[in-house]
Length: 197
Image 1: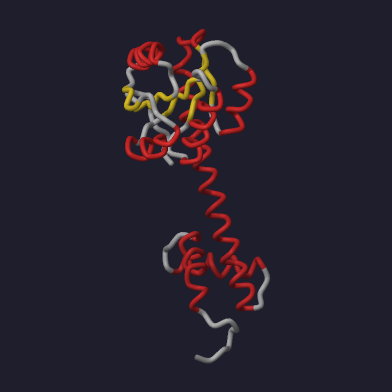
Image 2: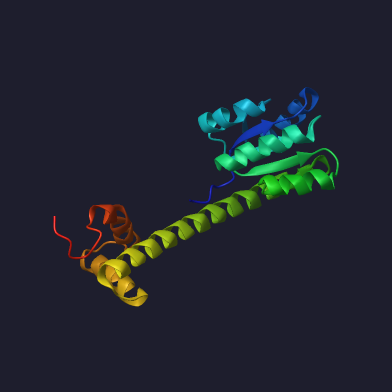
């Protein structure tokens, strides 16, 4: 995932009381960003996030902390964008629960001059998180491919990796692509190395 520059972001605002929506939207607009969705209900947040593809979401602590926490969890689970928890006064219990649900940052009305800095940090950490997640996924595929080759050829771990690496070099392909092909195709192979058709 590529780090998204923080100029003119598409921002989703959720769970803000009516009287606060205009205030928060004005702060976001003053930072040069566009508010693309507001007043989202829990049952709608997944579809709105999928449709609008925001760069970042601000979920405010409204009348119900449970409602805000459910919104945070749904957006974070979709992994469409990073979520920032917004509170109008310090609330350590809400922040603790929000951190368990997947927020990347917490901001308050008391520090509106620092909102942009928080957004910058959040977007960078979100990108790093997804890059790391992808790396773990690639590693898991390579490990599975090595296991398949070890079983089929009765070889050790190093020899299995060398088979994948050498094949990738000979065909000018990435190690991951060769490993993925082994994993994808292993179900088509006979269960035993010398089984007949």
